[in-house]
Length: 129
Image 1 (cartoon, rainbow, N blue to C red):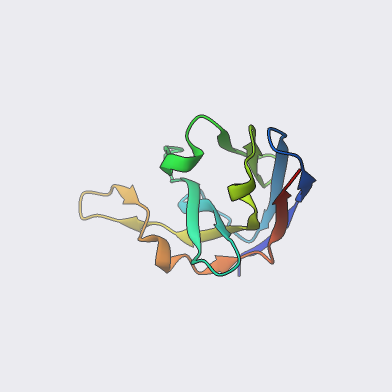
Image 2 (cartoon, rainbow, N blue to C red):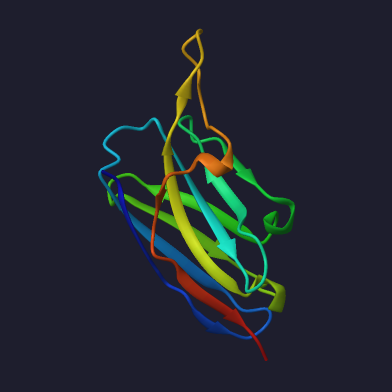
């Protein structure tokens, strides 16, 4: 069983920065896809960024240039560095994981976002002046 615990959320002014952390346990191989998601009040959950089994990173458009996802395998920790924060970034942020899938040619890939099946409890990010 994969267990995820987020931390690092808080309240910041527009233009500020935060670094979210997610300690991961139970994902004992590198074939897991790891990602950050967020959900604002009254809105659907959306992906922020993810890392696949080959450490290829995908950012959603709103995160490009402002957010950086990374992982430290030695610490079993996933990070999300968020800079130039905007009020519209206010949301509960979650880290999530799913075991990747393999094609017949042995290439690992991440399943669709809705199939992420391991989730942390979330950490609140509030951007307000």
